[in-house]
Amino acid sequence: MWLQEEFEEHAEKAKTLPESTSNENKLILYGLYKQATVGNVNTSRPGIFNMRDRAKWDAWKAVEGKSQDEAMSDYITKVKQLLEEAS
Image (cartoon, rainbow, N blue to C red; front, side, top):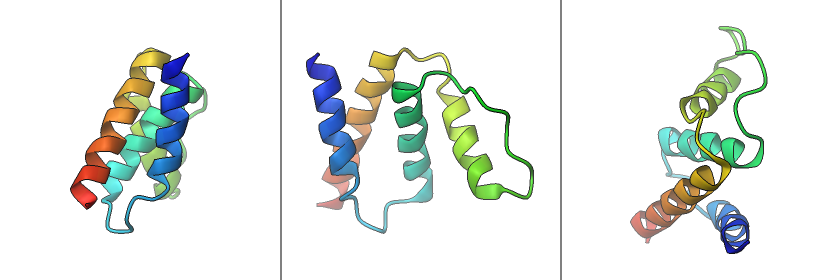
C-alpha cells in the first residue's frame, strides 16, 4: 500500500512544479496520472478543434496498457525528476 501513499504524496508535490515546466512534461504527468487512477482510456478522442483536450487524451492513450502500479511508479519518478531539475 506504500506505493499508493507515495503516489498521492507526489501528486501533491506535482502541484508545486514551476510554471516553466514544459507542456510536454505536464502531458506526460497527466497521462500517467490518468492511467494510474482510471486505467486505460475510456472515452473517445476529442475533436480536432478541441486541441487541449485532444493533447491530454493522446498523452493518456500513449501509456495505455501500463498497469496501475507501473503508472504510479513512473509518475513518481517523473515528478522527482522534474522537481530536481527545478531546484
